[in-house]
Length: 615
View 1: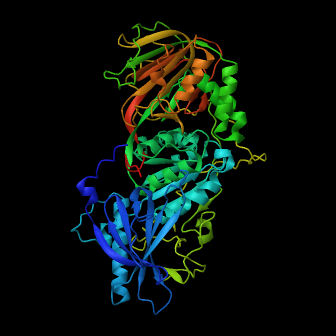
View 2 (view 1 turned 180 degrees about the horizontal axis):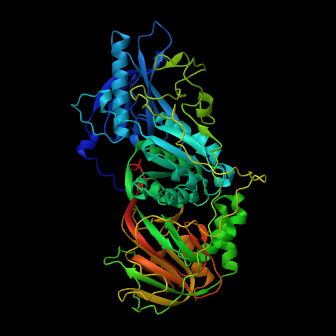
View 3 (view 1 turned 60 degrees about the horizontal axis):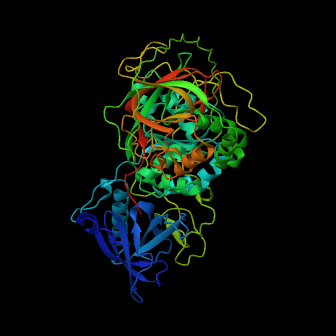
């Protein structure tokens, strides 16, 4: 195997270099070198290592850095702790910390200044602030900590979302010095109602901890405000704790991480969130047969995939395995659906692993009168079950199985007393960076924006989430669909139409259909395209299974299956000609019938973290 290419010179140029001790004081001593990509650690005493172990800490694996002070009056040293999440031998991440002792100065003030200089440099690099080796590093270089509203769906991921948020997400983003409030949603459309009443100026981002459904509510809530043009610019993020986690899978790939599921995917996405950074996000405006409109960030599905998605709801307790079981049952009772797919082709289609399929040009002559819009009822709004101001108590911020905190140290010279036996590989206490003062409206004192509440609604006593609505709430605002004629009207001559029997049709924006399903490997968050994939009837169950299995690696187009089609488009119309079927938008069941959609490029903003890093 050829050796990896050398790093660019700028990536290897030292920003800081120094000698430090460890805790306790009689431990080894180290030479530390900080570059824009990694912290290099070399043991000096008692004996230099010929082949240093754990001597390179990529910054992509670092969540944050904090400074500490000894509670002993005679100890003039200062300490800084680096919080890391390296991958283990089996690929999973585990939390680890490295604590270093700044003791080269004659006074505590000198050592504290050195520890803070290193902590500041690390936090600047983590948050994308460029540094050079000859630059004076001061706390003023650090950007103001962003204020995030984090919405948690307690029913997500087999009911484990809240516990995983407290075990993994809260500790990591606290180490990163992020300012945030947690709200636990109570029911379906609760998140949508909350964001409709938010004061946008209080927050720099909204993050959902659940599957894709909660983010769907947030986006449609932002776009259903009178000030939707400003609201949709609010950065949104997703931390995966659901069954599908499609957008999180695309974010994970964008960040350069290996494919992951479960807790590993959650830790990867949390690391990217800690590092900051965003990307424009295309949205799909979907008009349904009744004339109601909703917005999609993920996909529209009809046929096999939507059948599996909806019919596997009864297996939700299995987590992501529900889709596997649903696919097996779907293959056993494979159905075909007659319909008409029309689309406005992109002028330049992205390259596929194999040449694209040639398609006939035609014009749809189908004229359908839209059905009357159903009456939409709005659920009364409740306050959230949990509105947790932070910082939280230390026990609530400790991950399961974490080593005990440092003994005899206090947080930044004034924190609570900490006890425990620390042996050099243990845990430093979770602490806000003292170089980042809390903003006036930080979640420590911030309250939720005033929201008008309706009459109180009796909560469900079953303990299960309410059933999925048959149709999303209609959106009254949002951008105009200038590429779409009225639903039921003839299409312009530059559209392409295909008609026949289909096994499935998928319209997807990002690359992933699930955390481990890459439906459009060449797709980007802001390419301005909707990627259409379809499978015609006549395909065998074995061939369809091969396509689904190949989708795990994104190479299903290279199979050369004649029944598999693809097109990149700016808009499309789907007209089912089979009287019964299932249509989904972002995994949510919608009314069945003719529908059409248009891409709105870069309409939203997605919190993705930096691109292309690979530890």
